[in-house]
Image (cartoon, rainbow, N blue to C red; front, side, top):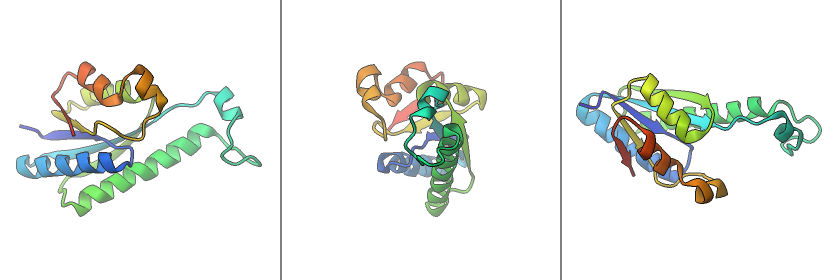
Amino acid sequence: MFQKILVPFDGSSNAEAALKKAVELADLTGGEVLILTVYRHHSMLEASFSMVRPSDPGNMDDIMRTHAREVADHGKKVAQDLGAGKVRAFVKAGQPARTIVAWAAEKDVDLIVLSSRGMGSIEGYLLGSVSHKVTALAKCPVMVF
């Protein structure tokens, strides 16, 4: 049934609730939980305005990638603490909804479980939420939690 369950994970409490549901489903089906944290690529112009470390701003993509890896690893630990038998965590750069859908297709995911609200920005209110876009674009079933 659901052998590969994808959970887009941004570290929010709502994402943790979706992760918990995915772990429960994986436990029932013997499936694997795949955690995906997506970070947004920053242009050189955006990086030049960075206030992260004014004396040494570094490469904004590297900073975002490192943070995303920490979030994904946290999600993996949460899943393991919830009793997930098979769990892996991944990080990708890109626009969240399209990256989630493309990655799910590439990995032949059977189900996507995601929260209806995460750590989105005003962009979500103007352009539509990530969960709405994923449900519209995904080729596999999507459970919005």
